[in-house]
View (cartoon, rainbow, N blue to C red):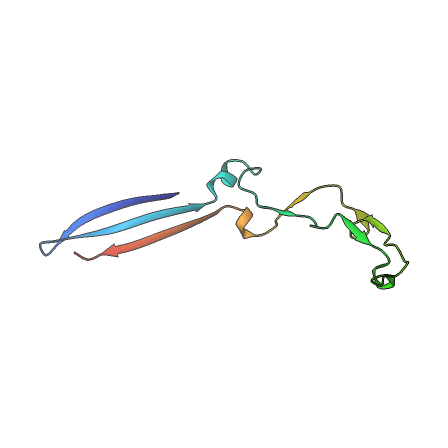
Length: 100
């Protein structure tokens, strides 16, 4: 969202202006912290093979699967919050002098 305000003045017969601006990035997150959040997938593999090094093509060893984990805990949620500047709001102020 961008808000502009122009202030006009005549200097030596030419119309010049001073422009103030406010840019709000991710305005939804400014209104409500739950809006405008980015989410990423926790893990694309929900199953992990525990004996992957023992498996030989055409061999007799069968793969053993277990649920994937993150930091030692079984993954229970599909998505997690992406903690970065893209998930937060920011406000930028600007000042510009226009010569005409």
